Length: 286
Image 1 (cartoon, rainbow, N blue to C red):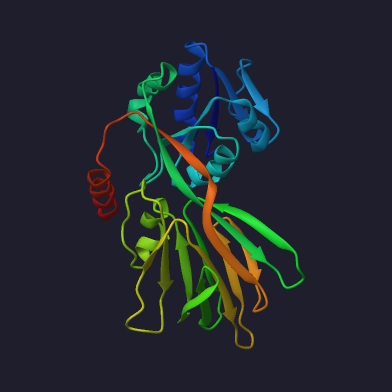
Image 2: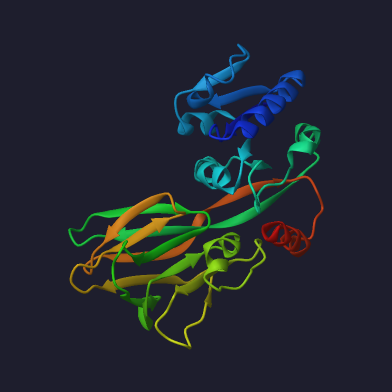
């Protein structure tokens, strides 16, 4: 069995936790693969270092992330592209998507003997059709945000559903979210909380210039598209999971739909999502 261990090397606790996980895996004859950024912290000759995340996920049977939800999101795209199941160990503050806490690392042995289930999470395909007939396509785990640039005025955003205009917003922006992403930026923007196993697209306006603008749920078979109207000295930015930023002009079109790919998250505990959510939100208050 081959496992990738992805570590947020910016957190000392994550490095310490990952060293325990690596030791656990090697003791159980699991081949461990890590990204080259981990090389200075993990010198064991039994750990194989790979040059990039693409090669890392092409090689392994499953992956473990050690960090917060940001570490999971960053790795999730590679995992989904290669159909690799993944489990998160939480050393972040909330860890909505993480399964294991640092005190329970030994529970990862259940993965090694097949004592787990896999939860399929819906992802978004986000395509940008540029005015010069070029296009870019991205995979979103949580959300795609189409919003005004820094220090800009509010913008006008026009939304179409299956090629038919349906509404427009004058706002700071809009969020296209997966059910997994409903507990991320969309929650802060006033959107509803969705069970992560649902199949739908959540559209949430950000600071709309209206008292009646609310979040809207769309069928997972729907295709949404958005264009913008900008005043002078105003920019619009499309952000994918807060990682990738693309400037959007009025001549561009953003198309959002359910991706053909899924994120496979390994679960080893039988937990009610809403109980877990309540616990995490209480932690946020403390």
